[in-house]
Length: 539
Image 1 (cartoon, rainbow, N blue to C red):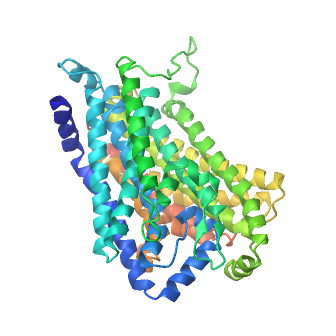
Image 2: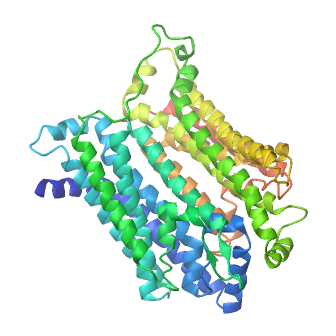
């Protein structure tokens, strides 16, 4: 036990900066949301109007969650819980992968195995660190809510809901780390499971039933299959129910135990899903070039991202007509939505627009991951061997950027094609398949900004490229989703590239915004290509 605690302290020391940023960022977002609701929607009538609009919009329910009354705490929890729960889940999964499969891939576990500790000691230490980090997160979120003037009991329950969702994904990521063959595949799978939990919760909320006053929505069955949906059912500021917290905690313990059992049953470096290392007797012509090698290394990951985007598009297409039919049965909701939906857009168009916006975020994330392969190659010494042949750094970086651009475009296109196809098959109405496909591609210029600025930071300060890339995406999401709620200046909100994407098919395409974002991406990429030649390779 002493060894486990020492290892946990060592891991905590390695992660002290990263975890502090995660915890303070999530808790700060909760505090800012609570303060904004208190100041901007101080009157009951203002909060009631906000909740009624949300209850009548399945797209809003999908993105934010379930309205549950008009108290300041209830509106704050509704506005921010789903997003903070996703962030807590990602914090937990990245923490686990860093200290399990990633350390295993880098050979650090071999050094640890030479000492008299059990093979599961490091995993126990990681689970202990993940538990402690989420405990601190829960207390920080609760303190933020209470500091903004919300009731103490509700603040504590809300913080516990966020922290226990994070703890659930700590256990889930630990299981995935034993099953998958590499840190890259583990990170991708675990993050995809967090996204799936958000989508399942969103589907259940979008199909929920609003009461006659439009102040509360009861979720549909799908939200029961999402840990984020479980946390939402705590209802900390109305009729508090701690039972979902027990479910989350119990599930986390079970998953942690399963991870330990799986680790005990496998050898160091092995996995329960084995990567196919077979290949042709002779290599094709593609990997002979820097661009061909970059494509070969990325194509499997690209297929995974495109599959996820296609699933998202299918959900958009499948839920659109269901939401339309549900609203048709409620004349009061239909009347309210007819006043809210701009122009001639239909309810299906509104829902599709919201979902394709999420697809744009996926495309940006896929692009960031594609260019971060440069950092992995440099840190692990492969770039030094690659650049020893007649291949310039400019070509090396340019190839990665080109593959990232292809990846970003392909992910958005997969979501748009899937949504268009499902909407056409179901004869849901709304915009034509061509317009839906174009609506997905309208987010590509903004999404391309993220891999471009990430590779620019890589050219300047390689160690900061990964934290900066993911932090930039998170900040852009906060500015886009919460900028108006937080009362941020318009110029600050406009720093988010997603603010310049055309919300098709609800809005017309804006070529000015697309050209501006494309110019920013090209300028950042060109600057990175110039700067990469002026620095030494870094470990």
